[in-house]
Image 1 (cartoon, rainbow, N blue to C red):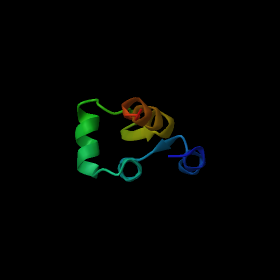
Image 2 (image 1 turned 30 degrees about the vertical axis):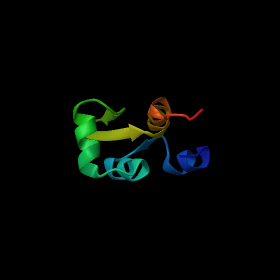
Image 3 (image 1 turned 90 degrees about the horizontal axis):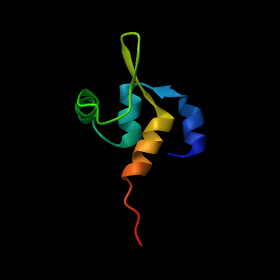
Image 4 (image 1 turned 180 degrees about the horizontal axis):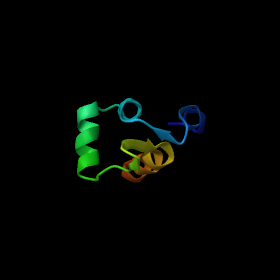
Amino acid sequence: MTADQSSRDGLLVNAKRAAELLSISPRKLWEMTNCRAIPHVRVGRSLRYPVADLEAWIEARTIHGD
């Protein structure tokens, strides 16, 4: 994701958009959310995913070559 992409998506995205951004299935996203493996926020009864936190989560798990 780029800064330009983040500004188009806003601060929080729904599960469908988060799964698309991460290139995973909605079911896999739900599994990761359920075991608290991925950053998420509850807004009332809805779950949302902070784009900036998803970017940081990806960066922390990226394996950089030599």
